[in-house]
Length: 161
Ligand code: ZN
Ligand code: MN
Image (tube, rainbow, N blue to C red; front, side, top):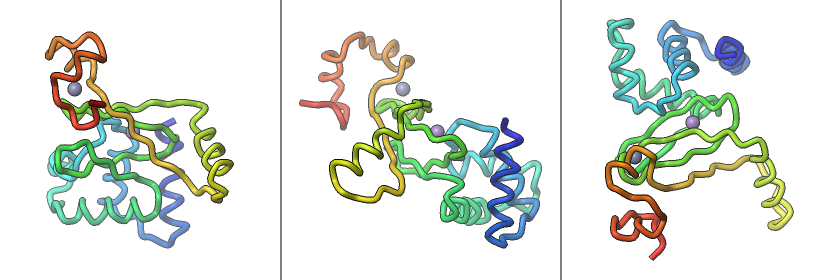
C-alpha cells in the first residue's frame, strides 16, 4: 500500500514535469512510510546519514514543493514549528495540547463535512482541513485527568471556559 502511494506521488511529480532527484525521492519515501508528522529537523536528522550532502534548506524547499503540489500538508501543533504529513489518504488530526502529539483519525464519513459545508454556504468546495484538540491518553495519565471537567485546571488554550 505504501508502495502504491509512493508510485502515485512520484507520478504526480512527473506529471508536473518536476525532476525526481534522489533527494526528492528519499524525502518523499520517508514521508510516505512515516506517520509521525515530522518537522523539517526530524526529517533532516533521519536522512542525513543516508544523504551526506543534504541540508536543512534542501529539506525545507523540497517540503514546500510537495505542499504546493498538494502531496503533503502542513500542520501546527502549538510548538511553534511546522509539521508535515503525506496526505495520500484523507484523514483528520487530533492534537494533544500538552505534548503536541498529532494523531491520525481515518473517518470514512469525512467527505460529508464538505457536502454539508457546500449545502449550507452555497460554496463550491475544494477541500477541508480539520483539527481536533485535546489531551492524549499518555498525558491524561501523566496529569491525572480522567474527565473533561478536569481539563479546566490545566488552562489548555482550546478548553472551553
Ligand atoms: Zn500528550
Ligand atoms: Mn496525519
